[in-house]
Amino acid sequence: MSGEREFEASAGLGAYGIRLLGVDGLEPMLVPAEPGWPTFTLVNEVRAVELEAEHVDDGRAELALRTGGRILVDRAAAAITFTTPRELSPAELVHPFLAPAAAVVARWHGRDAFHGGAFVAGGKAWALLADRDGGKTSTLAWLAGHGCPIVCDDLLVLDGGRALHGPRTLDLRAEAAERLGAGEYLGVVGARERWRLEVPSPVDELDFGGWVFLEWGDEVELVEVGPADRLARLLGHAGLRLPPVRPDSFLELASLPAWELRRPREWSSLADAGERLLALGG
Image (cartoon, rainbow, N blue to C red; front, side, top):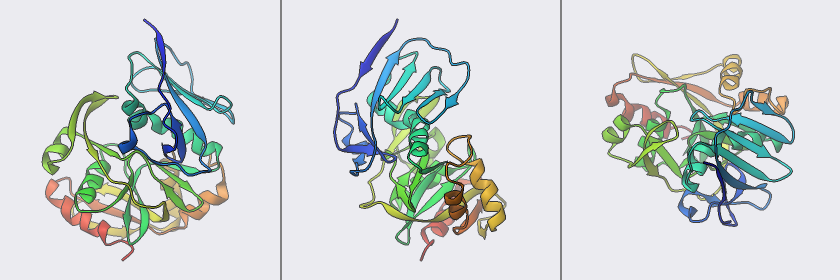
């Protein structure tokens, strides 16, 4: 079975610095697009496809999906096409499937992108970076539950020292949703079960303050990360496995303040860790 679907346009909304067309009815998930944002239409083709190798150049990218299928990002056509074994809803396209394509678009427009989230403290946006199962999204959910604005979850896009908003959702795993008492059960979306928590958008795009790297440890502590270590860590969290598009900009980002936030895996440590984050920039 094969088919193609292009969703009805909804002008003026977007995420990750992209004005998105084809996402009608998703206003709560998106933010107002700025005039200079590039416009891309989201398309879903439903058919089997095999991708032999991923590829990114200055006008076209093909990326593999963990759930099977591919993403084709075509700069000239201003289209992002998701070819998948099953039909995806517009909400699924925006989150979680959009993030890899958004990293490509960010690169094309001279922006830096990182696998990670961001929150607001002290009037600035702070990145929250972690390895898989490192507690990033549950930490963001705790912050959101304590009145902290959330900038993004899966992908952080930086443009000229500003952090750009991602979709207004956090997707929790079962234990985090139960422990935090948050999230609406969606079933399996992407490669796993998800409990979705909607978060409000900060009023404006925010100046970027610096970096927080999450690690598991024996106690809760916030330790400054030295400049040499920052660069290696940031490269490990880059949105694409490619050299930075602007090395000078990347080095400037690596010079910003950075901390490692360590905490035990026990849920009882989350509140203490969250309070340390809320105090940043104070």
